[in-house]
Length: 276
Image 1 (tube, helix red, strand yellow):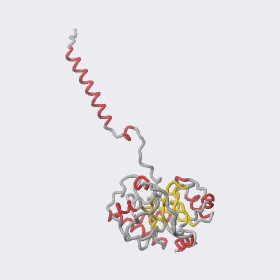
Image 2 (cartoon, helix red, strand yellow):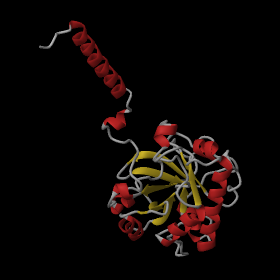
Image 3 (cartoon, rainbow, N blue to C red):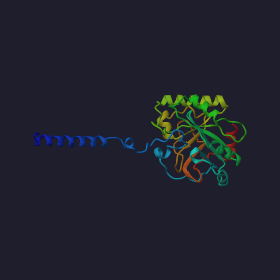
């Protein structure tokens, strides 16, 4: 015959309550994404010009009316899909850049429609590479770019390739590199691109990223045209060494495709850059 011991039952209840409380506290400490929330990191290959500008630099209005002549352009990538090029041309857009590659692992599935479509309506166009300096060397990425749409020809309609240097959408802003390592990586890319094409690539960047991740390095300004990213009424302070910009990405909310740009000069200056 069993003997009921009230103290033992009470002890068991207390132990069970304590275990439940501990489990509850442990669950509350688990990060949200581990509990089933969506991972905020975008998929590889989805990066594009200006992807990090709003998050890091914000937006401060639209450009003021320019005293000097400027020429409207756009930049596009795979996330826009098929682009209505006739509509853009009729709205006054005369040049375009199209994403060709990212790292050594991604090519834009919409590249042919975007690159050939802009050309067919009469635009001067070029292609760009989204850099991921933590995945492969500068030389390897430059070769991948040239081999997959980043080449150049002196036909008066092809702009030199552009190197997109901005915040890492997949991790640490500077891709885990020191400022000197980043400068060396960029130099490696630019030297390889020039060796393959005979042209100096355009550098796309934001002053804040360039300052943080290269130490505001001035050494490329004498050879590589600057494409500055700033969504504001003026371009603001430029990276060290450049006294003027060649192109300015001024918004991500423009007509038809979102990303709109201005070339610092009339159409004949766009043609001059294409011709080298």
